[in-house]
Image (tube, rainbow, N blue to C red; front, side, top):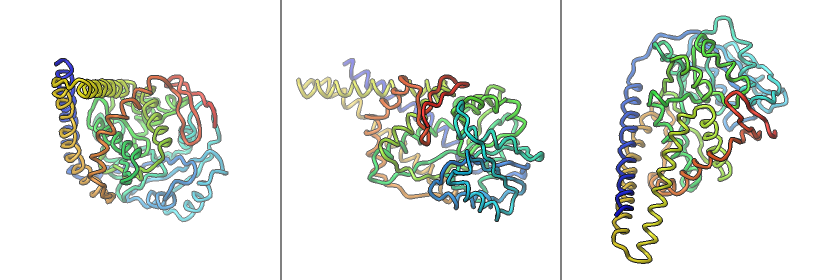
Amino acid sequence: MLVTAFLLTITVLTCAVQAVAFNRLMRYVNQEMDHPRSPYHPFATVILPCKGLDPGFRSNIEKLLSQDYPNFEVIFAVASTEDPAYQTLVELSKSAQIPTKIVVAGINQSRAQKINNQLKALTELSPESQVLVFVDSDVIARGDFLRHLVEPLQESGVGVTTGYRFYIASISNWPSQLRSLWNRISAWELAHPAYAFAWGGAMATKRSVFEQAKVAEAWDRAADDDLSLTTAVKAIGQSVHFVPQCLVASDGDASISEILEWTNRQLILTKVYYPGLWVRAIARAAVMALWLIAMLSAAVSYSLWADQSMAMALVAGLTIFPLELFFLVKARTLWKRVLTDNHQYIEESFLTSCAAIPLAHLVLPWMTLYSLLTNRIQWRGVTYELLSPTETSIISS
């Protein structure tokens, strides 16, 4: 009976937590989607660090340069003129209708290359610049993307605004389905004022807030831009504001090794730069790992000894799946509204998404708990050891 009570308790608590989190997210997103537009459009500097040519690179840059925003400049940053992106950026800058610059940052062994590129770009800001916008080259921006990202900065207490990535995985790619599910659950935290975080693919902050929070100093020897910006901004009493209109659909397909590398990187970066959120993830993974062990123990006991109490335990534990399926259905409706409004909706297989839920229970807790064992990550071919939020060692490049 103890196993039954344990599994039932975990199921009830897990579903209660999910219900609270999802309802908070749904209220938040619907409120933001219905929020009236604002005339707040200060001069903005968009900083885009580049390394290599992502799929759709030229098209993404063209959409960025043609944003429906009255006053902005774009600063591109690369490590060297030998980077494959450099020549394409030169060509696109020549035909741009807005001010653009290309800076060459060089290499710095004490911080991530992306941050090194961003810090170099920050030395070239226009004197008119009031808002800093950081984007990634694989972001496919809607025409009013920049307007939506900047407008909430006029609200008192908002230190940084952020979009988020929404992975779309193909039907047969199970590792990518798992990443997609894991990433979407993480998105639920964006509606929680205590745990919301900035995403480096699309984030904006006032120049004055950036300077007051001393973000450039925090970046000086760091491996992460968005979570370190998050903690720096929150340290001065400012909040992170999620902008659903800046949710970006992305091709989620990747190999097993790429998915493992990506998941490990997200967890280690969170562990070092935003430990409160990481502890929350570890606690959730530990509970799910205990649930899985209890389920396996009950299954073995029932198959060997036909113990009816173990059958009851299995039934209690399995009730988590229909409840999670309910949240999956509601979440699909919510995200469909957002992505349709963003002109980025892509139909997914409902059955494949359903099948990913039990697979996630088998795999994701252990992937999360693995982050207890290491602080080493790989990022675009470079291996980093994260010694602390202000100390990063490049192991190989």
